[in-house]
Image 1 (cartoon, helix red, strand yellow):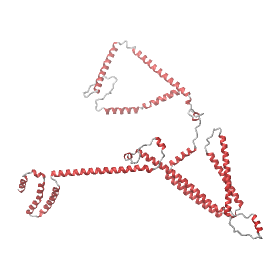
Image 2: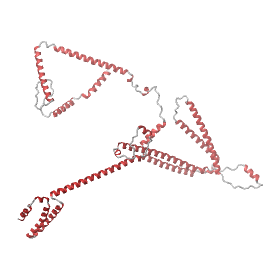
Image 3: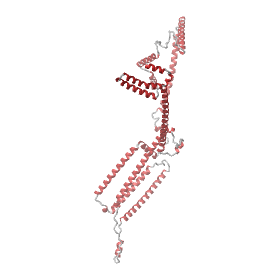
Image 4: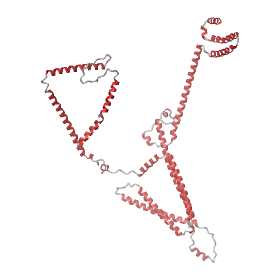
Length: 525
């Protein structure tokens, strides 16, 4: 039943895209009908294009050409053939009326037999499908633990562990890649300021403790100092041992599973014990030399006095007797040692800060160089204007692996500067050429305009005279309003003289001949 339900679900999922509700199907039909109506330009098509039994003849329009005409002819022939076939069948049925009754039964039995055969084949297919589905259900792939990594990799050899240096390097790369140079500088400045504030607070606390303490260095006994030195030595030895144990335990043991591992471990233990013994001896020598140095520094030089003869025995006895121990000067060296330790810590912090800044700057330079190389590969400007000294040979894969990585950003910027300058010079040259071409075109245009003016009789002298004549005419008109008629006639003659002179200069006046005399007579009359 589960297999049949699953097959039914598969069939439903396959047919879901083609099953629509009644309203949606009606809407699709309306959309298709509107689309068909829009495709038909006239109202000639009002009936369905395809009929089961068409009884109407097809009219062949006059504008039908090519494939359309052939299709309509074939359609009319098909309709006529179907009609004739129908008439023949009707005549045959009427002729054989009694013998036509058992035919439907035979056809029904044949259809039933065909349907039974189809159903039998479908049943066999479904049975085969159900059989193989049951077989697949019994396979181990169907179990939920088939893809369990523990069972899949059971019995296989374990992968080697990743070295600690690689993991630390990857973590450092991720952290340095995510941080920014500005953020690192701000963080370092904050750390330095915090360290300075803590140092000032500790110095103030030390001064307060010294001021409150009632014990002076001169009152401390030698036995107390000796106990303090022994305690300091023990603490220092314990600290060295713990650090060595951490260092030896942090290293990856590459000899696991080796039968000779126990011997190597024993050898390492003996080596560590020997190193510890040598360190203890050296530290004891250091303590003895330090004590002797402090005694020599603390001794005060005494003047040499010649002893008298009668007191020689007493002086020799006093020399044999042990004298008082010199006063230690540890309390004098302690502040200097503290300052030296503080200076050492500051130098260590500065060295770490410098190395961190160098790493960050190198990474930033590497990113900048990669960006410049990427831009140079995609640029169209650098190939157009290459530097004269730059080599055009491309490095192969082997050359890129062997060649050392250079972080010189200036050598990558120089081609851009040279290409920009070359492009600027080329642009200025192009602009100058275009300006020269424009000036030449302007001069040719001015020359053509001057020739046109000469042909039309509008030269430069003619223009100036026409303007002056217009000015005199205006003045004469305004002056003639208050003068007698004789003066008005003189002014008009005076105004007409320049125009006649200009007409004489006209090139078309050569073609007039003696028409000027007739014109003057007409003007006088």
